Image (cartoon, rainbow, N blue to C red):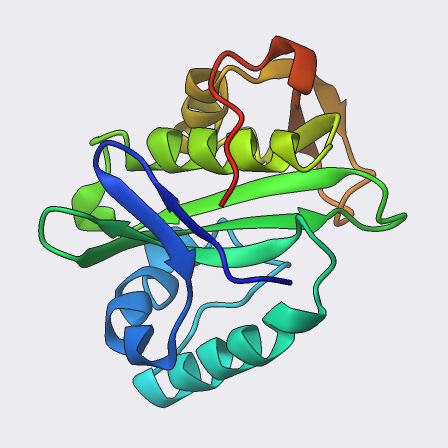
Amino acid sequence: MASLSLETERLLIRDWSPEDAEAAFRIYGDPDIAMWLTPVMQRVTDLNAMRAVLDAWVEAAPNLAPPTGRWAMVRRSDNALVGGLGLRLLPPYEEDLEIRWQVRQDEWGRGYATEGARALLGWAFAQGVDEVFAVARAANSRAIATARNIGMEWVGETTKYYGLLLQVFRLRRADFEGPLVSS
C-alpha cells in the first residue's frame, strides 16, 4: 500500500511511525479506550509493547490491500498525535469493510474522530469502495454518536462479527456527503 497523507481543516492523517510510540501509548494503553478495542486488539501494557505494535503496523502496511490500513491522526496546529484510524475487513468472511477510530481521552468531545473518519471515508470511496461499516457495542455511546455524526445509518445488530452483540452502522458512497479525495 502506498503511503497515505490526508489533510482536513484541523488534522493530518498519515502513516504510523515508530517515533509515535509514546503518544500512541496514551491511546492504546488507556484502559478506557482499550476496553472497546477487544477482541481486535488488547490493551497495550507498556511503552516497549507499544513500540512493538507500531513496528508491526509499519511492517505490515505495504502488504495491506488498499484501502485497508491503519493511520495516525495528528493535530495540524501543534503536531500532537490525537488518535488513530483504521480500515479493515471484518471477520469472519472478510467481505465487509469496517472503519475504526480511537481518540486520546483528553481530546474526547472535540470532533476529531468525526473529522478524521469523514476524510478517510472520502478517500476510501474515491478508491472505489461502495460501502463502509462501523460496529460498536451498545454501551459504547461515544462510538455510536461518532458513527451517526459521520452520516452512517444504523442497520441493526448482529453477532456475526467477533462473536459479540454489536450495533451495525453503514455508509454507502452514494449517501456520503463530503468530498472524495485522493492522497
